Length: 211
Length: 156
Image 1: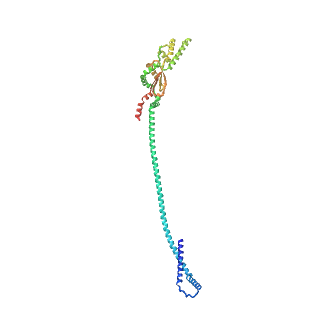
Image 2: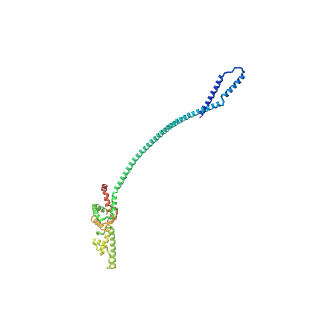
Image 3: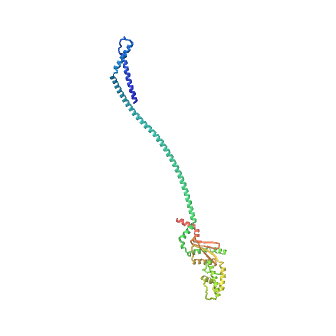
């Protein structure tokens, strides 16, 4: 808007200069009267003539005409500049939008790239950590399984040895619990006499030695 | 005087009881004679009667009674005692059979002391003065533990 005003003022100033130049040209080409008067009088007459000429040229109608022309010219220039300005503004806005879009896209792309890179790095680290953890867990599991198997085998062997060691007592206890109340000594006498016969000599010797 | 024990006298307690009864019998017989009470008679157990008959002793003869009492006093200290452990309370006939076997095969003066040991399940344990003879099922199972394992594992 300021540019348009400057242009309008410049146009008015240019119009005034043209008018002054026309006036000077007119005075220089006007036929001179015979010099028969004094200098002071001549100057006074010239000033009066110039005054009259100016008043006759720059009358109200001429001034209004100039004013209208200046206004129209001013409006035309204003309109053209406004149009230029609008076009320029649209172009600038468009370029600015494009620039902003490009810049934002670029910055976003960079940021996304960095973000993706950092995510990839973090993912790699996490995967590596998980792999290490899995490896350690697997090692621990194998070790634990081995220990458990060994301990289970030892415990099984211990229980089995204990069972075998006390198997006679266990069976004896079972028989006692099962038929303890139904034991008949009479039915065992043949078996007992058989053993007594086998050990008769040892019993006799011990009794003889004891007495 | 050599005394022979009857089958009904199985333990040292029986011999001691017999001695006490014989002593009491002799004392009472003396008292009866002093009182000249011929109708009064002293009761005698079948065990004492059998023992007297086994050893050819007339209990009505005071001399025989004194002789038997004196012999029994010495005899009860010479008894051979063996200890037999049973898993359950044995019947009298079972004890008698064992006593007869021991008297026929080992020593005629043997008496037994009966004990209970339920953990042996079956069979007996005989303890002589310095030895123990284990004829129990428990010992048999211990001795046959390898076969027992084989049987058990073959069944698994």
